[in-house]
Amino acid sequence: MPVDEIEYQGYRLTIVEQRGGGYLVEITPLAGGPTIRTQTFQSTQEAIARAKATVAKHPVTR
Image (cartoon, one colour):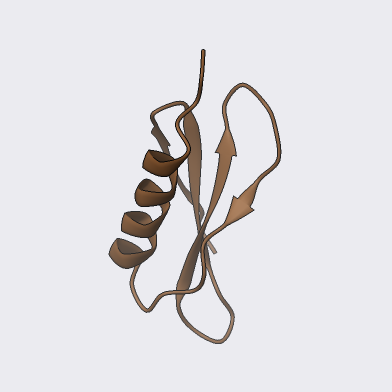
């Protein structure tokens, strides 16, 4: 199962396909730190949109 990654505003967003169907995104700070996950969505677009909204609420402070 291929894994897609996107870098977005100081985070790595990794799209993970779920066995029962759907997708979630793991959100990991590029500078290091804990990984958080979105809930599972039916499409990758929905999962990525939620991940980007989560990043917008918790920007990386430099």
